[in-house]
Image (cartoon, rainbow, N blue to C red; front, side, top):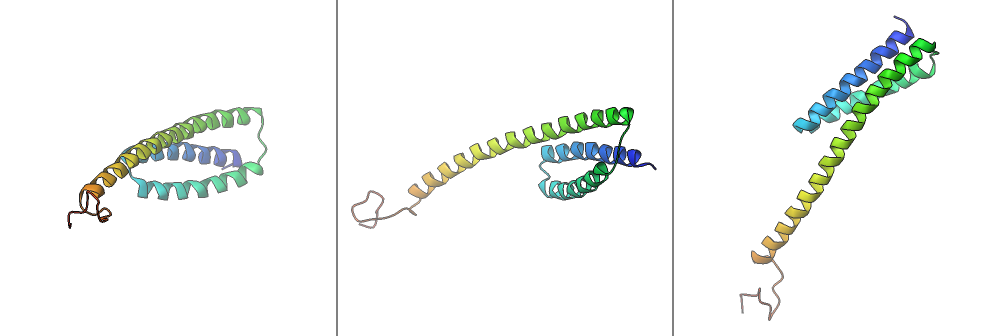
Length: 122
């Protein structure tokens, strides 16, 4: 197998991995996602080493650019999905924190100072 074929295969693995990662994000399988990201990191390291040491002809360079474009689109979509989840989580966290404050204030766990309305011991 030539280096070009190996690099093309690595690119295809990265494209497939981007699809798997998106699926895991959508299914909220975050533990498995972390394992895939570790695998992806190792794959990228191997890929970058091979890519630096390989010279491509015009046709090969065009094929690589097409695959890179597909990969970048998929990775961009994954990033946008994670960003939307991040903002959703931030909104939900704020909502939960507000509920906790209200519950704490009315559950008798708040500060009970003399003369306070919450001080029912007087």
